[in-house]
Image 1 (cartoon, rainbow, N blue to C red):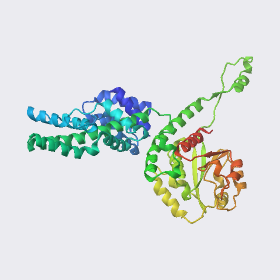
Image 2: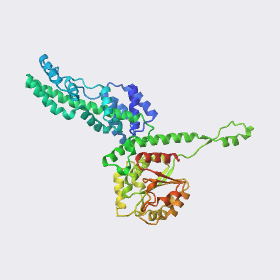
Image 3: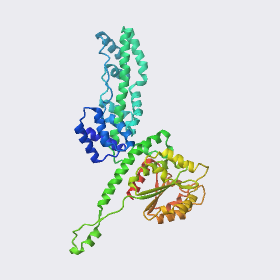
Image 4: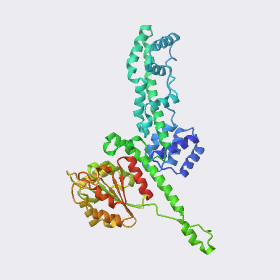
Length: 460
């Protein structure tokens, strides 16, 4: 049981729940005292020791039955209530079927369903490796049902009933058989869903250092459907947990410092040049950020995911201020820095402040507003992050202001969803902005955006 609890904790961490080593030990100690006989008490003990925030309850409730469930209700045998003659009739009728439907009906009548290994193999064939969140198990389960022949089940059951009636089985026995088959059908679907959900959770937990997650993270943000966007919003929870862990690890290393050879030699000259007292270089690892984001419709998802990642990682940033620009520039720090921010509602508020207008983007004019009202937000410790495609509707680019921001701050990073081949085409001013930036990073998908945020937190 201890091993399963450790696996469960890994699953929680991979789902975005912060669980420290001390809390893991508390959970094991609590179970050692409370025991596992009472499942309700067992669940309450784990939840009390492992979950600290209300927003993490959903992940706990989703994963607990996958790791500690029974694997779904057991299947029943239809043969138990049958006479020996009726059993022979059923076996004969089933033998007349062929292919996958025969195997499915054997499971649904005998009560001996597929083994765990068979379910795992069927889930792989159904594409379980393509999914990253256990709540997506239903898609794989449906695919498994298709592969097993569920689409033909009603037709074949009707055929089976005709055969049994022609062979002389009573209507009462046939109705009992159909009742068992229907109950087993529901139980088998539940077994498959639990197995698929567990496989997805375990696979996700096996790659805690992989920031790139599912293949969907590599799909361009401007090509996502609404359903795919929702799936990536779930993926962000895992990313936040990983980015926080990576940032915290870097900070612990930074506190210890890096060996300073020159400092050690200088400090130990009083000992005749023999290094005795080691000196370490230490650096500030929590960055101070100013985000200036293009909130035109073409930039919606890039900015949404950037804001989500940044503000759910506020504890890894010394200070963060955010500004949205379109035809004007406004500060939006308060909208995204609330403890439980709803990104959709926050963007709706931004859209009310900066309503849509055709060909409305004016980056140059927005930079002038920033200089007039908010320049004090940037100092020598600030990393300025521009998030936009550099398209300016042929308005003055004001490259001079971008250059001054780069000199005034610690560094200036530009995140753009457009590749180099599109810079300078049409109304794009990226060819003029790029040379005055410390770095320009292409972020066409969530994987690239996560890597960019990771580097920002690292101070690279």
